[in-house]
Image (tube, rainbow, N blue to C red; front, side, top):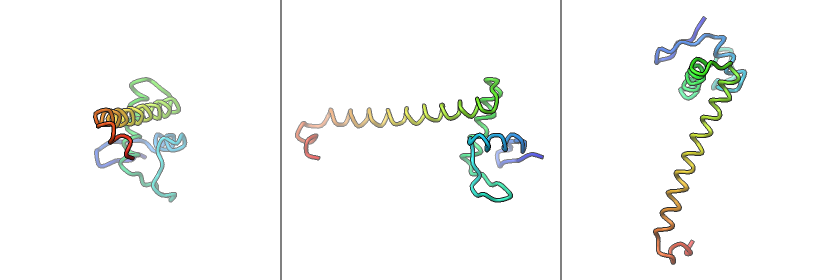
Amino acid sequence: MGVETMTEQHFTAIEICQVVELGGISPLFAEAEWLFDFAALYSLKRICRLRIELELEWPGAAVALTLLDQVERLTQENKQLRHQISRLLHQPNEAIFEE
């Protein structure tokens, strides 16, 4: 028994259940037949790749994905804050204190 996605990725039911149990992905609805969005399928693909490439168990792969997502989020936030600081430093002093 397996699952086929629109991108021809194949995952076993066991793989999906393990990732759901670990909180790596969540079905869209709590029904008998699970339905996942593309973000969840992308996360599942990344977790499976981490398991293979780093030879991790399911919990380790889920933690690694969580940490990678956090690094990406913090990197984006850092980039936005640096852009805001750059804009503030290049404005006339009066404009900085108007808000």
